[in-house]
Image 1: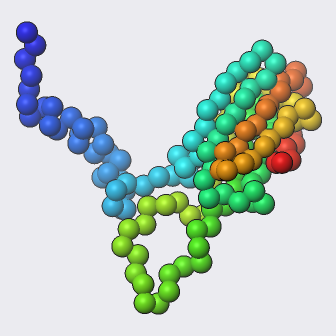
Image 2: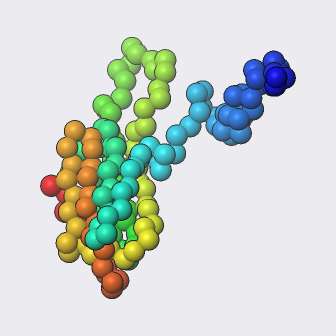
Length: 141
């Protein structure tokens, strides 16, 4: 039968998160802009399917850029215009501002065949593979 160290079981979660909590000046931790863009990427023989969660990003500020095997997603999150004088912020955990994430894939990408669609905070990008190198942006529909 395995021996359970009660103190270790209580401290393990705290010790695991200690560096992140210690380095953050904000209560509850800090989320970088890259961490604010959560992605799933699936590879198929001829393309990559990238899905990114971008809640709060307006389609007008969204950019998808491709250069070689790199794809960059960027946009701006604006949640309101500020607080009225008589209010104070008690808890502010939502990210506001510019978000950007660059991902390096295993193959050169063909921006002329690639497409992007944005709906309900979910960006879906079909990134077709190519053999050459070309820098370009993809229009978001």
